[in-house]
Length: 259
Ligand SMILES: CC(C)(COP(=O)(O)OP(=O)(O)OC[C@H]1O[C@@H](n2cnc3c(N)ncnc32)[C@H](O)[C@@H]1OP(=O)(O)O)[C@@H](O)C(=O)NCCC(=O)NCCS
Image 1 (cartoon, rainbow, N blue to C red):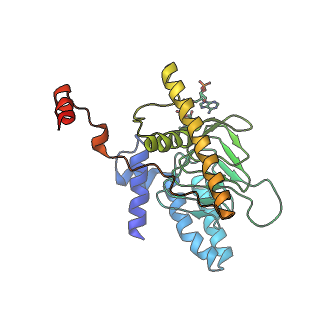
Image 2: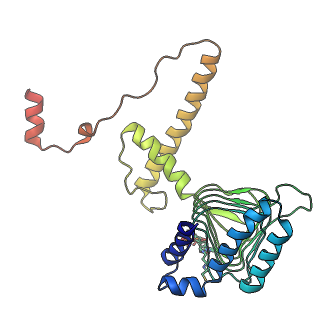
Image 3: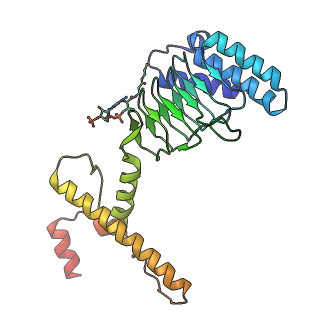
C-alpha cells in the first residue's frame, strides 16, 4: 500500500513542474488527497460497505472539490492536477499513468444501469474542462483537449478537440503503421513523419500507406484461399539483416565484388 502511495506522489512530482518536494505534494495537492481517499473507499464499495464508501467519497468531495464515485476503477500513478470540479462516474475505468486536469467530467449519457461511463486506457491525458461522455474507450496515450466534449471512441494516440470532439491528429496509429510497413520493406523511416511539409516525404508516406493497404488485402485474400483449401505457400519477405544496409566505402564495395 505504501508503495502505491509513493508512486502516486512520484507521479505528481513527475508531471507537475510546480511540485517541489514530497512534503509539499502530500500536504497541498487535492488531487492526491482525492486519490488516496478513493483507494480507501473503492475496496469498501466492492465489499458491499456501500454507505461507508459513499460517505468517504462525499467527505473527499467536500475536502477537495473532486468527486470520484467509489465504484470507479482507477489504475496506478493516476494524477489529477488542480482538481476542482472533476467528476468521475461510477462505471468509469481508468488505466495506468492517466492525467486529468480541473473541471473534467467522466460522465454518462444514459439513465439506464450498467456500464455508462468511459474507459480511459493507459497514458490518456484529459485537458481542463473537457467532458468525456458515454461508455466508450479512449485509447492508449490519447489526448482530449481542454474544453472538448468527447462523445465517441477515441483511437490510441489521437488528439481530440472541440465540441463535439473531433480527432485532429493520429500520430501513434499512423506512424506505427508507417514504421511497420517501412521496416518490412527495409526502408529507414527514421524521423519521417506525416506532418513534415516536404513533398518527397508526403509522397513516401502515401506510398507506404498504399503498400500497407495492398498488403492487408493480400493477406485477407490468402486467408480466404487457405480457408477454401488452396495453399498460398510462404509469402513472407526474407528476414532483413543490419549488414544489408551498412554504408560501405567504394574501396570496400570493390573488395566485396572481387571476392
Ligand atoms: C489538445 C492538446 C492536448 C493538443 O496538444 P498537441 O497534440 O500538442 O496539438 P497541437 O497543439 O499541435 O494542436 C493541434 C490542433 O488542435 C488545436 N487545438 C489545440 N488545443 C485545442 C483545444 N483545447 N480546443 C480546440 N482546438 C485546439 C490547435 O490549434 C491545432 O490546430 P491547427 O492544426 O488548426 O493549428 C492541448 O492543446 C490541450 O488542450 N491540452 C490540455 C492542457 C490543459 O488542460 N492544461 C491545463 C493546465 S492548468
